[in-house]
Amino acid sequence: MIRNRHPLPALACLLGSACSFSGAAQADFFADSKASLEARNMYLSRDFRQSGAAQAKAEEWAQGFTARLESGFTEGTVGFGLDAIGQLGIKLDSSRDRRGTGLLPYGASSLEPVDDYSELGLTAKIRLSKSVLKLGTLQPSLPVAAYNDVRLLSSTYSGGLLTSREIDGLTLNAGRLEKINLRDSSSNDEMNYGGVQSAHLDLFGGSYALNPNLTLSYYYAQMDNLYRQHFAGLTHTTALAEGVSLKTDLRFFDTGEDGEHRYRSSARVDGGRIDNRFFNGMLTLGLGAHKFGAGYQNLSGDGDFAYPGLDPYSVNLVTVNVFTKAGTDAWQARYDYDFAALGIPGLSFMSRYVNGKHIETARVSGGKEWERDTDLVYTFQNGTFKGLNVRLRNATFRSSGGLTSDIDENRVIVGYTLPLF
Image (cartoon, rainbow, N blue to C red):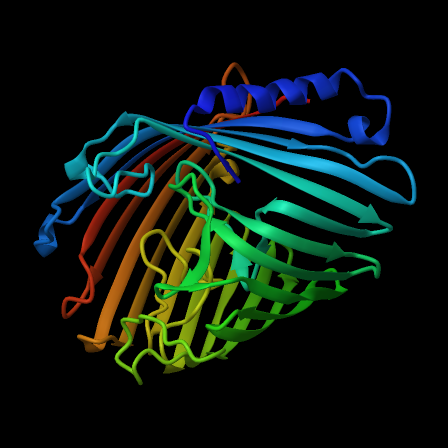
């Protein structure tokens, strides 16, 4: 990822390159290329006053732009290509006493949110048969490593990732991630967990679709000198009757230490030892326009659940909290409704509640946390604003015993993606 203190030229350069490619569609490299520009306007307000936190409120409003270019591959047995991503974030409203929403970075000493920030990432890719090797800026979405895209700009990794689909139904991945660029940053930082840096994270695994309704997954990951991790997963969907379906999503991690380092954990177990088993799963019953979900997790052993970045692969990764502190047992109830059934296509509603208990930290034993989220989303279906997406999100988070600050949160997100070619 290339850091640029003057974001507009970098973004314009990427878009200009994309447009020049579009006029030269003579080979697969050009003919199969595609480019898009996403605009995301986001307001986020977090109120901490009910818990007496030092900062009473975090409130920011910003505009983000993300340009993506994906080339095709050159002709021949071995094909070569190039992808690029350019991101620009612009402050619309913020201040040093309302910073920290994750929308904007701020100075370490001044604590003043920046006026703008940007980044440009390039990815070289090589294709042989049905296997593709990518080197450079990556945005994997795997159980053991995933990028984050729930703020203004998305996070990225730097490294190499091989994806192979030589056998029908089987997808294999192998890679090494060496740097991480967080969602509110323009710099590539060392891989780390719990405040301890690591040279890299290696991963290997894949998924196999036994049939269109049943997929099994296995992955192994090792963050050098920090932790090693095994993952096994199962997803299954079955039709119970006309308009009635049941989806099963089961996930299990076994994580242990790698090397001699001790991470700086909040866990009140063995000085920060990583040695735990994490099961989580979700059952979702689809009934026409309705979906009813029930989730459960059990995190046993020592230490918090370990993962890179901000997104653990858990059904309880929700708006505010992740429910991955040591010892956390949690359950979730969720409801979704698609208003297309009432003649309003594009409008959807979601509400969920997660309750966690038995949490262990350095200061709290048997702690409890809960969160309630509500989303209302509308995507314009036609007319001048076709494709424009508006999301209203409300979240309430509470914890006991001083685990962390209580939060009342509201978000307004307006997004639009323009295909360039």
